[in-house]
Length: 169
Image (cartoon, rainbow, N blue to C red):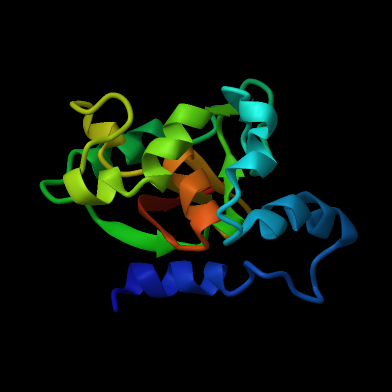
């Protein structure tokens, strides 16, 4: 196991909650934990609605500051081989507000595992794998790409294979 995966596993260990969690944190994660492994698309998309809010809490941001270090992300994307880790989706925060039913269904169906065909932007290197940025200290694990795959992993009760970097706050 790589040092990077060991570091992520440290964060994954808190996915189900802990007694050190504040009531606010527990409330933020309650819906995510309820969906974990449910395989129930109807909880997210009742009455066949085509678009819904992401199931993850919204990532924090400071006014006027970028949410992630673009130089670090670009450097990771330019590596000759993707460095991936397996992240528990229950610890993730969202970098976008919505997901589409069609996109989540695509990743729930198993088609991606069979063919490698992404739901969108197939030729974009940044969409080959989901991308998660963790703020140094493990305070937030922000999805910057791959919200539909992360949502499908959550519903399936599986870890998300993603590119990952850890950056200073």
